[in-house]
Amino acid sequence: MCQLNWQWEVKAPELNTSIFVIPADFGGRTERGGVKNTDDRIVVLNKIAKQVIDSQRGLHPVFVFPHENHAVGRMLNSAWKNARIRAAKEYERITGMPPNKGFKSLRVHDLKHTFGHRLRVAGVDEENRKDLLGHKSDTSVTTHYSAPALECMIEMANKVLETDPQQKKSLTIVRKKAA
Image 1 (cartoon, rainbow, N blue to C red):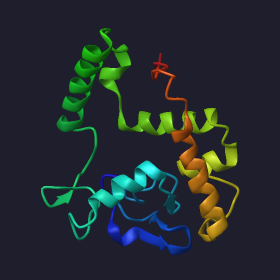
Image 2: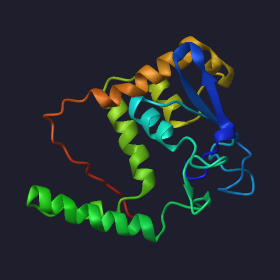
Image 3: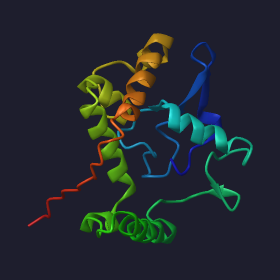
Image 4: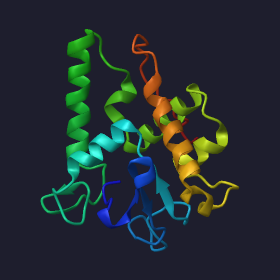
């Protein structure tokens, strides 16, 4: 996401939105490309993501999230680490309790896991979760370009916003350490 490019945006006027199609070979992660599963990645925007993207329009001609006029190279940098520390302090200030130990070491990828978990809790079926998370799926990528399929994916992505605001559940990160 830190290298998200306006060129990858595809307008879907019939849905009053747009999606991003990240090419498998854009570079970034490895010499094979920047997308982990080596397929083009379709990114739909729920209501909140659409607001964030729209707020970035016009800031840079190429990159959606520019930093000092270029793309952010990676997310696990000093800015991210400092933000975790500030967030942990703010959490403790607001709740009066120290955050979970994992909170201070939260990785960007953990946010993807949270999205996947919230999709599951919201009742989104496995096939749609796979599509939204960019996992390999039995469905053809071309099916995602139809308006009804995109509309379904956007609807599923918005389900994570429908959680009960009275639920004050925190994210618990469980990692199994290698022996």
